[in-house]
Image (spheres, rainbow, N blue to C red):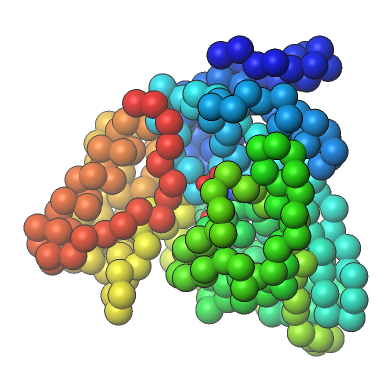
Length: 297
Ligand SMILES: Cc1cc2nc3c(=O)[nH]c(=O)nc-3n(C[C@H](O)[C@H](O)[C@H](O)COP(=O)(O)OP(=O)(O)OC[C@H]3O[C@@H](n4cnc5c(N)ncnc54)[C@H](O)[C@@H]3O)c2cc1C
């Protein structure tokens, strides 16, 4: 790939960066070019140097991504550890950049006496990933709180868009136009002076009791079909513990697939396919993946 980059960027782009270092499943082949911007201006200048036709991918904390073993062609923009400004801009309004970790957002909202933001505490991703996924838990969803977002496109142009410009559903976000990514959002909460860390602890304990926290996973692999739960369907199909190579369906929560240490992306994808086929055969239900599967096999 020939990237017409200024010398400064040439030195900062990591070539053939293993994406297994950047995903919670710890699998994934190399990114052809991997870039961690310093700030929005730096990002805009970098994007302007990416030739048209070179694919651009974004990664936050990689907690909802299955990158195939052949890796990703083109450029991967990583917001991990950067674009992480978080401020209160009004009595109930918060502005957060896309690289802010959801857990930090939850903690800070509690300090500010704002809520309900506790649900963000258990989502091990960035705000950018949560915006892309409409991540949610325990009845809360990211876009319930979005007033507006700031985006950037491949020409480096930034825009402010209102929430109403997006079509939002359960784990679904349809943007007004493709190839535009989130750099920040203005979020709105309620005054909750009583909100405290105890509520977060309770939610995290509930999570720990029902999910294999601490093992390598991507959270829920499938979205829940209307009126049912993917985990119930998978368990009822007798798939708990089913294993391919070093990947298995969790014994604790059937919608989680665990990498026990040496699974490849191909094994994980094969297991996802097997679960989907079995649930269709046993229940007649077609499951859709929540995890985003990207890259070259
Ligand atoms: C143990 C565990 C528990 C989980 N529990 C939950 C849960 O309760 N609820 C829930 O909803 N999810 C849950 N998840 C899934 C995951 O944490 C969320 O989907 C999270 O929002 C992903 O954020 P991320 O930064 O890791 O995104 P990534 O996995 O890095 O990316 C996910 C998608 O978002 C895109 N993206 C990332 N950043 C941007 C950006 N700035 N602009 C545009 N697109 C972007 C990526 O290209 C990709 O398509 C869980 C995952 C794990 C491992």
